[in-house]
Picture 1: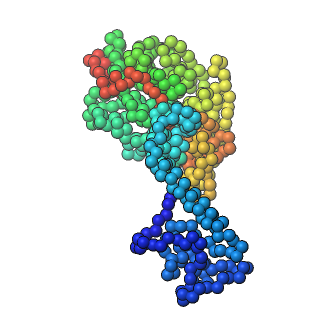
Picture 2 (picture 1 turned 120 degrees about the vertical axis):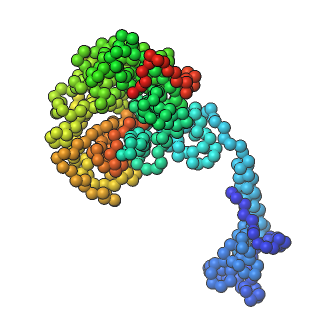
Picture 3 (picture 1 turned 90 degrees about the vertical axis):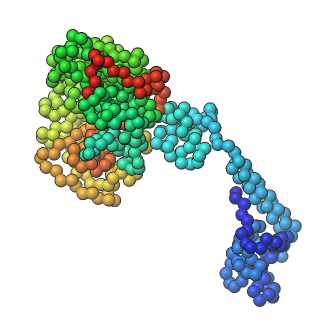
Length: 505
């Protein structure tokens, strides 16, 4: 408890009487004791006396002793004195404890139960704890705690209407959790283009000049820790140099096994795949070149670039409505057929990962705008089950307001309400919609009308949230604070170039 001191001008005030009595009346004559059943007045007039004497002749602006106590006929003065002494002792004890707390040094990182508890707190809540005090800021900023804190989807990287990289928080409020300008890369590179994202890491193509005509580098970076590394250039095999092959890279990283990441780069020849896949491993720091075991008629959909890393295997969609897979060592190749009886043979089929399972979905934009979502039930046999269907038009026609509160604390997703109407969007027969992501930890999907609205939809309780009032087709971002490969630091900023290599595209 803070001690309270008088700030009056008088420095030599008399000590408080051992037996406090009510202040005298303004006239100077002593006041009669009130009858026993009447309320006792402690100041001049009819009101109750404020602390410190109420501003009368013997009062003060602030009090430095316990409030005056009116003596009753049956009260023993010695008991009153003992009670006052006890109050003063407690006050001094509180003052001492407060001073001891202020003199304690900053809290060091504990090794015991507190650290174990904080390591299990979601990252967003951990950030809130940093605002409690400076010791809590130091504690919750510990890398050992942050890297173990369970992470979930926090937002989306996307390119805005001005072709600038932006970031949208999932809850629609507050400044971005990460700086989308990637300032830690700007110290070296003038032009940066994000090619892909996987589990907290970004794959970028970077130029040291402001022109895309010069030499470029592949850079893998972690926006949360600001670590980054430059990949060596892809060297086209001598027998394929004349074919003008172009690599199309896909990043693979599993935050639960953060010891390595991989980049898969099918080499494209004109409008088709050459059958050669370059695979980079952070463990070796080198590219290996393998011949694909997929069908010769397989053409990866490099326009949409839908890809998922699941159980150490890269999954890529094809233009033939199938999914091709390859493990991180380039030894196991497979092709999985899309669900049977797709509602549209024209609209794109996309894939994603949620709760450790592979998802596929399609919106029939040519007919009734119906969304179909499947889950791969049996990975061995390639059996799909239809998980959910919903009319997308109905989702975007629901009035509501931008996220006001969160009802999914683990997913950071809120609900619509009717407090602030934004009205029903006007739709026509030419509108198209896109589902661009599925939440990795719960049954929530994300859709855009490609014009002015992006929403989330909960498959379990059918709740809708407006993420933002613009169309985004973003890359899901999940913060990663895990320890990255040690040899990253050996290659940071140390990009090498060879005359036989081709610059990344």
